[in-house]
Structures are given as structure tokens and as C-alpha cells.
Image (cartoon, rainbow, N blue to C red; front, side, top):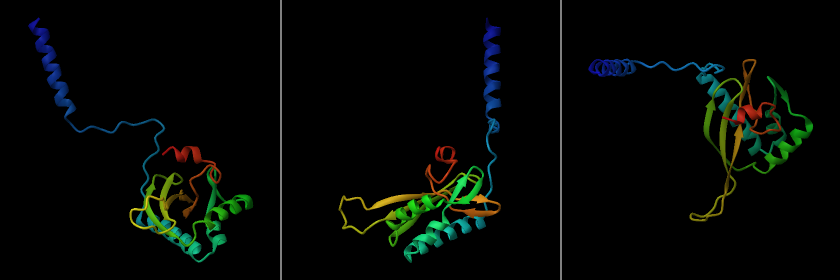
Length: 165
């Protein structure tokens, strides 16, 4: 009986010592490899966002709307006239207000996210009335160039996959 107890103790110690070594990250089947993005990627995306906001602030709703593309499978195409008109009506309500980038998450070529907080109007301190909303972009890199898409199920055939993150 002592031999069994001694054997179990030795196995336990060896297991503990072996587990203290460097652990390798398990490989998950179907996992996409991590992508590396450069400063140029971030700068290009921020430039697109800034141009978009400048167009809105100068009342160029059509120009801002034309910057938003449609992700169709693995292709980028312009929005249809119906979708562009719908987007323009939405953007007309948020022109000339304060936009603030809250975060950028770059995951891969088409599953990325930018959260923009929009202050719709100034309010006195302590006023409980909500005055902010958020707008989400989904930048996509296609054929070496970044494009803006939005986080919704109308302008994006990949929305279910991309909105799960």
C-alpha cells in the first residue's frame, strides 16, 4: 500500500513540476491567424473617418454617404441608390454635431470595428436627459485599400459573422 501511495505522490510531484513550465497556446481548428496591422493602416482608417466627419460638418451628406461602401461577401461595392438614400437620411440627423472616436479594433481584413460617440446637443450639468448616441463603422481592407462599411445587417452580407465579435 505504501508503494502505491509513494508512486502516486511521485506522479503528482512530477505532474506539478511539468505543469510549471512554459505553456503553449492550444491550436483551435478553424482559428484565423492573427493579423498584424501597421501604423499606416491606423492612419488611413483615421483619415477616412476624419474626411467623413468633415463632409458631414460641411453639409456634404451625399459625399459622406458615398464614402460608406457595401460589403458583399468578399467584395466591396457602392451602396445601391435605395440604401444610399436611407443612409443619407440617417446621416442628415447627425451632421454638425460632436463626433468622438472611442475605440478601434482591428481583427482581420473585414472584421474590424470603430465606435464613434456622437454628442447630439449640449446640456446643463446634472441634466439626466440623454444627449449621446453611438455609430459603428466596420472598416474593411480590400485589395490593399481601406473602405468604410457600417455595422448593420442592411449594408453588409457578412453582418452576422462580424457582429458576433
